[in-house]
Each structure stands twice: as C-alpha cells, then as structure tokens.
Image (tube, rainbow, N blue to C red; front, side, top):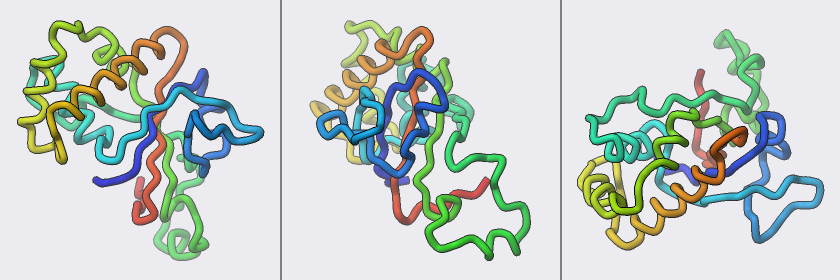
Length: 174
C-alpha cells in the first residue's frame, strides 16, 4: 500500500472523524476542526509496514494480526452489502475511494510508547531489513520512528491514535 497516511491523536472516535476529508495538518488548522498532533507518512500502512515495525520492536516474527485496526470512517454500519448496492454508490462515495479513518489498537500504541531510547537504533536496523519497510533509509527511518514513539507516548492514557488514509486510488472493501 502506498497511501498517504496521517497518524494523529484524538480524544475519542467522534473527534477522530470530524471533517473526514480534511488532511490533519497541525501547521494549517482548519476552521471548525480540531487541531491534532500529527505524524504525516506516505508509506507506513498499519497492517504492513507499521505491523513490521511492531514486530521489530517486540522482536517477534511479523504477522497480519500485530496491528488490527477498527474502521471509523466511512461508517462500517453503512457498508453496501450487495453487488447492486456497491454499483449504486455515487462516484465520490468514501466507500469506493476513501478517505478511510481507522483507529489503531492501544497495544500498538503502547509498544511504540514503551520502546527504550537505547533500543531505537537496533529496532531501526531490524526494521529496515524487513521487506515491508519500503523506501527505508537509515537516518530518515530513525527520525520517523522517533516521531511515532513521541506520538504514541503523548497518546497513552485516554487518547487514541487514529489513522487517516488518503489515497484517491484506495478502494475500501469490508
């Protein structure tokens, strides 16, 4: 997956989905929308690349269930159930082209938040060797991991980490 991704903190699911088509950019807050703590990434999707980072941190083999997200938007309760319903969707339906907002599990947040600084270089080295870590370049990856760790630490407690996937070619199928 090469989607544009924003990992951001929101106090709850309702706030995470406010203005779902708006990019979460702290430097350009949108009128009437919350200001989020954000890490913008173009290649770290939750089930693949982020899952392989979690595996590198935990020093376990990668598996698809390391980072299981919950879809918040478009609302799962509105998903078309038949082929006819899918075909009847308007061209601009978020069910067809996104965006998609998922909530990351607390377990992934906590794994990132609890990594010790002394292990960061080892984790980055291990992660960059993983085929699910495309476009990995040592210094950039270290900076990225440090940003994700800082976001996860800020998100511990009651705050949630959400993920906004913005990719015009992204077809969402439940």
